[in-house]
Image (cartoon, rainbow, N blue to C red; front, side, top):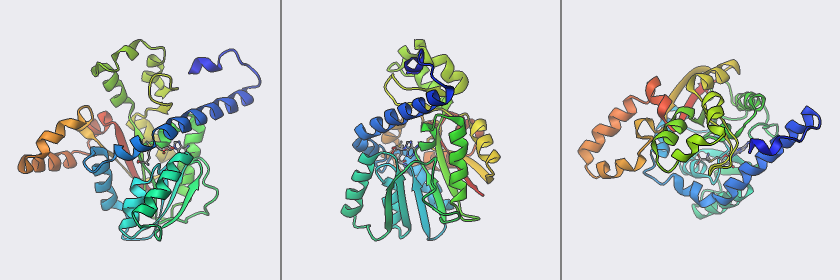
Length: 290
Ligand SMILES: C[S@@+](CC[C@H](N)C(=O)[O-])C[C@H]1O[C@@H](n2cnc3c(N)ncnc32)[C@H](O)[C@@H]1O
């Protein structure tokens, strides 16, 4: 994908703009084709979903207005609306928003979903400062912001629209977990020879072309620095799949044995914040305040 930009050399500014537009289009096209897949990704027993719900229960206030930024087909919006929160869903992919609107009606939670907005997380100027009692950006939308300056702007925007003391929960995709997967999983091992691989290891940037769409794979210390430089306080980072990252389906058998599953699950939860567990998790989630 990076090669698509080689050879064209107008002004650096135009080139950068063209690159952004191209990447935005690619990411939106990917999610337009994947609406159902995205919805199904979080079936009830999905580890990322279950861990995120666990952390939402732990950190969200008892009620109030929540922004679900990059909320996709609306899993979390609907779940929270069912619990009585007022929610605004924002996403860049129209097909996801159309699906979410239908699903919101189907689940009978229209009263609590105050708006479903097409927009980008880099620019939340439609919302005034300190509007929300909690701000969410879950499942990795920030990893799809490929430009570092725009990632900084996104974090500032998420902070700006949160009330003082409101929890902000942001999850991203892990660089180390992606490298582990490419190395361990025979389905992906051919990609170790792909031109992007070295750059991905050192910089975390993948511009698409081999299955998944463009994303930035974060190191946890890089994520921490990005958030703290933008003004995040009381920052904590949790794994969302932890050591289940590589064989998520391996839990299915174990879950049938309630006693053993209970031991595995409570052990897993107790280790979520360990740095070594965070690093290898597919996604990790930061909880912070402004
Ligand atoms: C992996 S999905 C996560 C959806 C949802 N938050 C969840 O966890 O189920 C990523 C979502 O981010 C959205 N997205 C990607 N880049 C975005 C951007 N710059 N602004 C807003 N949404 C974006 C995509 O359209 C997609 O719906």
